[in-house]
Length: 224
Image (cartoon, rainbow, N blue to C red; front, side):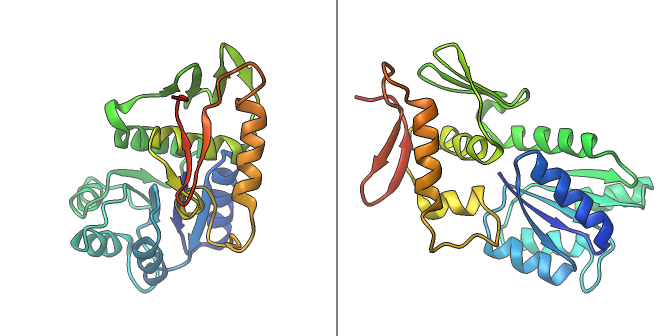
């Protein structure tokens, strides 16, 4: 999953980005409201974490303008201003959640998981295709009952494929949701990571679930 963090305090921003990346999220960073608005309009983020008080445009203004343009990416506002009126303003502006500083990274991660869960059909915590199962809370993956150890990037890639299964997804869509803005689109890293997953998921003796769809990209589905 790909997250945009907008925070003008360099130290706070660094800690947020570091913590989110450690959990396997691809993270882009904006340092003011104008940059946050531009990035959110041009990239299909799974969630936005926006400071309220930023240079250029505040977080409320950013979200109001995004909603007017029908960009409905879920938003968590983070701010030192915790009055009820401020929270109401944030929710009325189009935010989905509101977290008052100082907060723990653990709480932010829990709120992100809850917000992203609400975006999924039926709000499920476990994704399944055939005998492949991914628990999004424990971050464990099993195939035919056996646990599979994945890196954070492999987990994010498999999660995106599971969320879209059985529909195929393009390499561009994978890049947009699994890698951050610094990704070099000229590399073959997507193919490399798909091979990593195949070696772990489609082991000998098991029906293959990861398929290359010629001219489109990749799909996770049961074989015909």
